[in-house]
Amino acid sequence: MKKLKSLLALVLALSMALALTACGTAPAKPDGEADSDGRTEPLVISFGSCAADTDMLSLIAYKFAELLDERSGGMLQIDYYGGSKLGNETEMLDQILTGSLDMGCISVNVCSQVWPDLGVFSLPFAFDDEQMFWDVSYDEDFLAATKNVYESTGDVVYVGPYFVGFRHIQNSKHAIRQLSDFSDLTFRVMAGQIYTDTYNALGAATDAISFDELYTALQQHVVDGEDCTVFTAYLQGFFDVEKYETQLNMTAASNPLIIARSTWEKMTEDEQALFMECYQEAEQYGIPQSAAYVDEYTQKAIDEKGVEVILRDELSDEVMDEFRTAVQPVWDKYSQSVSPEYYQAFLDACARVRGEA
Figure (cartoon, rainbow, N blue to C red):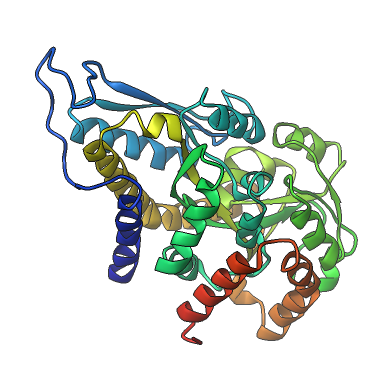
């Protein structure tokens, strides 16, 4: 945890390079006194998400809002809209890019439709474990490169990776314990060709069904399964019709938090620093909470829904090598479709984290 905290602190220092010069708690303003940018009223920041109210993504958002309101003396407030109240992720991303929505945690696969380089975060088996995800994301050089990608269009500011663990694989037919178990399954995949390519490489068929239609598609056997966090599968009721989950840890469930630059620039430099400070604290709050959530909802799936859960640790090294070999063509393809500089920055960060550099 100490190592993680030091890595998380890097994001604040790098954000300072944009406009930040101070870090600390902003004092409350007496009634009627203007902030240094001329505001006398709180800045209310709309925050959109597709996560259910009890999903870990939402719990982190509420913590962030609580910290920001308290430490800004009420001058910075977050108005959170979860549960797709503002539309799907593609729609919310469009709203952020045009400034009609202030910020949102948008899954990296949707972000990569605007910034293709970000597809590296969706590469199968890119991260050995959650700690590696954090270490790579906050590697100083790679973090700077990621910020440059997001901010290259001038429309948004990158806040952080908003990671809540790995996406697990659920289905209604049978347990997945080896590569051949994928051959008779059809999976709902998220937007983004990389997910179709990944499941096809594993031997499965795919169907790009919207998330709000997924439960019905599972009931009617249009698809056999999907991949999402165990708590999302439980909270969305998928385990009512699916009785198998393999926690393969193939794909990171990263939903990066981005804020419209027009909103960012309404804050003073001190407020920007405070905003980043509160986000980092909310993110750190979520790390042990997310791990506990996975354990809690894995047990609930087993005890309450009768789900057969296969853990990553139950799979042999030989089986894992078989999976990784099967998806190597996905890496080969996407190494040619993202910028060589960013792809190399990603590989270099992974090598440093693994102690190979």
